[in-house]
Length: 142
Image: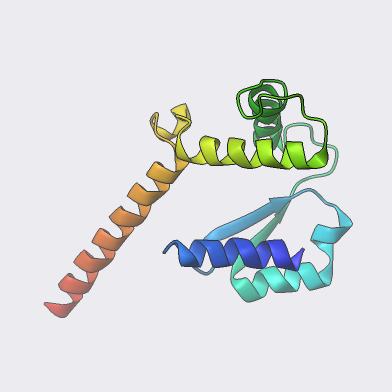
């Protein structure tokens, strides 16, 4: 679990969107790997807030269930991301990688104002930089 987490954090830092302490939440089910002291300590070291869903609540992971449904419909059951029948783990991994890239960089999301997540996040960070500069400038003029 530590390696995927570190890779994700490294990728955010590399793309100029570092994790700001206590502004990122890691939500998971109540699986033992997510409740382990070592894992939760590692989240705390990285400044990530842990969030564990309630047990037996069908609505708790509604967003993930939606993503899983979209993944199955758009990636696994269609031939858009793989013209061939998916016959091996490698075929599924390649199709999944293509779908995730498309989902984040090209797919329009109504919840984000009909822009892809990457574009939405870039606008968020650009606005944040502008606000930080304005705050710094105001502080200097005091």
